[in-house]
Amino acid sequence: MSFHQAMASNFLQADISPLRHDSQYKDVNFLELLDTHSFSSGHINFDTFQKLQVEKLVSIVRDPIERVVSVYN
Image 1 (tube, rainbow, N blue to C red):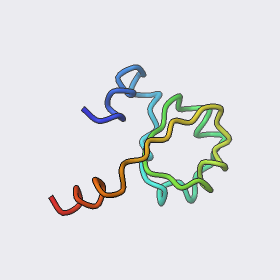
Image 2 (cartoon, one colour):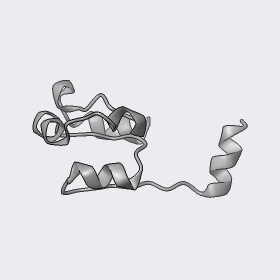
Image 3 (cartoon, one colour):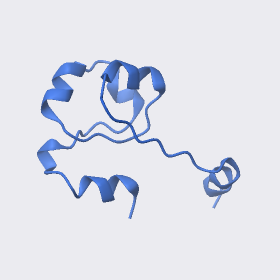
Image 4 (tube, one colour):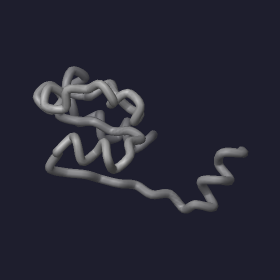
């Protein structure tokens, strides 16, 4: 089970943002996104996160060596 799946199980489907990657956020009305979704997770850079102006952030950073190895396995 992924972190996203574990966390998302605590929210209604309608409250979960469908956006998961930084490129999907470029034309988003951030205030509207916050009004309509209680949970969002994915791969976003810090600049995008700052635009979201959210109150809470959980960041998971993987071991760099394990990350590289997992790409090739």
